[in-house]
Each structure stands twice: as structure tokens, then as C-alpha cells.
Image (cartoon, rainbow, N blue to C red; front, side):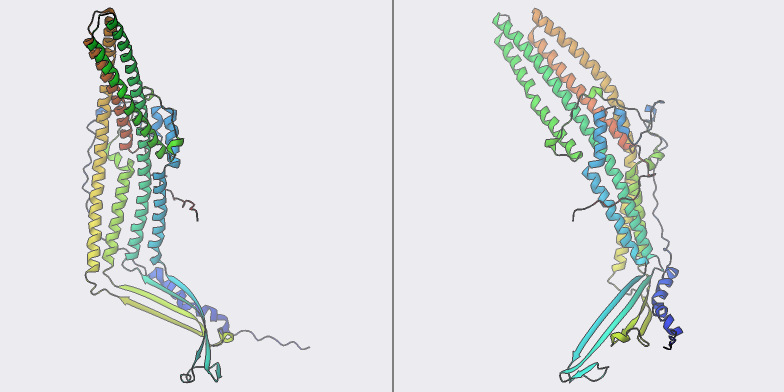
Length: 503
């Protein structure tokens, strides 16, 4: 059998696949080359007032330590450390902040999509029957008694690209990226706030336990004295008035216990929420405020605080985002140029879809210039500038508030430390006076009024000491928060994976 040589494909046939997509490739290749740059805009002046040093800088000591990220370990409480570590993992406010980062990252992709060409593929198959009254023009695939029928097949690609000559889309992308940074700083703000709240709530639990011990101890002392007075009344050396007065004091002491129980249980429930636990299944051992050590920390320089506080960096990123939004709104006033390209094959017969003459293409460029839109663009620019001004003032306030937070925390910690020292002395003296009066009452050398006065003085002094110790610890945690809790932006703004969500 004679072999018949296969006729090679023509050059046109070999290149048809390349030629068909040429218009689309032209749009794709021209897109990055024609993209422009962002229009320059005037940024607002920050006008920050940064002091050279804190007013309470003299409170710093040579052996003080700079805050670390695990600053709570300085209080030397294993239970507090466990609560802090669990809160970082399970706290729901932190989880919400992480979810907001996922949203912000997705918005970056949405905002950046206009910088790329849009490519769409289409495939259609159509079969149509027309009546004999309208049949006539076109290619008739089949003519019957009932009219004419014909088919149409189409495979195509289309591409479009809006040239970002004035930088509108790129400014929108940069604004979204800064907003994503805002979300990351917000996570750090929420984390620091949560940890400080956990510490403060734990200290309030310990304070309530201390106050309960004081109340029960004073109640026991009041009941002991009541028993002694009743014995004296039976012996004729005390009056019924003395008995009634001491009974009233016992009732008063007993009435102070329920509110303290409420405070204790409410703070434990608050801790459970911070740990993302059900209050019914959550409990802590607690202890006493006297076991908590207040760590020392240096405030550093005010200028350093601008980089140590995540809320300041958050406000700064928010301002940067609004700056780019203003640039995007300004660029919207300029003409927009759009490139479009379409290519494909079309035929009335499926077998001829890729045959000669089936290929088509279009290339187009269009320019759009806003002329009148009811002052829409002007209003949007004013709105963007208003947001920019708002974020500028918010940034200034964040900086000044940070300086004020440090000053207030330093003063509070210094004064409560001195007050604690004086109050301990007051408690010791009150306890000595009460012990002496009780001894003299047993000996019958002092009247009941003196005993009641010394007892009430001791009760007040011990309760005040518990409150002062709590205030001192709250001031210490506030100082850590004011200094940023040892936070630094390095390595803290990594990408966040979207959590799994039940379908």
C-alpha cells in the first residue's frame, strides 16, 4: 500500500492559536506599563508636643527593669501567670481582633484587584428557529415546513483594564494596607488591655478575700467582747446598754460580710469570662495581696513611648490610611482610560468552529472624564479630608493621653506606696490599742466606750490597708499598660491565618 504523506499545517494554521489571543495579550502587557503613580498631596502637620522627660522621672531607680512582654511574672504569682497565659490563648476579645485582621487582609485583596486586568472566558451554543415569515437573511442550516433553524457557536476571551494613570486605585490599595496594619495594632491593644484587666480582676479577688478575712476576724473579736460583757452584766458590773451596744456592733460586723462575698464571686465570674470559661466551672485559689510583689520599672523617655504603645502606632496607621484615601478621592477628578480586548472563534457549525474565517477580535480604548455628577466627587473629597482631620486629632490625643497615662500611673504608684507604709503603721498601732483596751476591759479598768472606739478604729484601718494595697497593685499594672507592656512592633505584625469556621 502506498503511503500518502500528510500535508503539513500551514503557517497560518500553526499561528492561529497565538493570533487569536493577541488582542487579550496586548491588554495584559500594556496594563502594567501604562499604570501611573500616585498624585502628591499635602500631608497635615502633626505638631506633637513631646516632653524631654516625665515630671516623675526622679522616681526611677537604678535597679529597675524595662517592662518585658511577660511583665506579669514580676508580681511573682504562679496563679496569675497561668491566668495570663490562658487568656492570651482563649480570650474571646482577642479572638474577635484576630478575625478582624482576617477581614482587613481580605479587603487588601479586594482593593488591589483593580490594579490587574480582568480576563473573562465565554462559551455559548445557540440553536434558534424562526418563522417562515421572518426567515431570509443569514445562513440557514435547515429549512422545513415550519420555518428555518440555525445554530451559532462561540468561544471567546475578553480582557479589560482601567489604566491607573493618576494613582487612584493604587492609593486605595495603600489605604487598605494601612487599615490592615491598623487591625494588627488593634489586636495588640486588645491583648494588652485584656491582660491588664485579668491582672486587675485577680487583684480585686485577692482584695475581697483579704477584706473577708478582716471582717471575719473583727466579727470574732466583737463576739468575744460581747461574751465578756454579758458575763459582766450577769455579775452586775455592766449595764444592759453596754450589752445592746456591743450586740449592735456584732450585727454591723456580720452585715459587712455578704457584700464582700458578692464582690468576690462577681470578680471570679469576671475572670471566668476573660478566660472564656463558664463561671459555674471556673474557680481559683486566690490568696492575699501581701503575697504579691510589686515589680519596679523605669518609664524611659517620652519620645520612646511613641514606639512602645500599640495604640499610638494604631492611630498613626489610621492617619496614614486616611491620607491615602484623600489621594484616591483627589485622583477621581481626572480622566479614566480603559483598554478592552476581545478575541475568539464563532461559527454556525460546530465542525467549522476552529476553521478558517471563524476567528474574530476587537481592540478598544475609551476615556471617561467626569463633567457633572451633582458634586459627588467634591463631596467625597471633603468627606475624606474630614476623616483625615479626625484621625489627625485622634493621633495627637493618643500621644498626649499616653504621656498622661504614664504620669498618672507614676504618681499613683509612688503615693500609694508611701500610703501603704503609713497605713501599715496605723494598723499596727490600732491593733495594739485594741489589744490593750480588751485586756483592760477584762480587768475592769476601762469602760466599754473606749473598747468600742479602739475596735472600730482597727476595723477601719485594716479595711483601708486592704484598699490601699489594691490601689497600689492597680497603679502598678496601669504603669505597665501605660508603657506599652513591653510591646515592640518587631515580629508582632505577622500574617494571620483565618480560623476554621463550621460550615
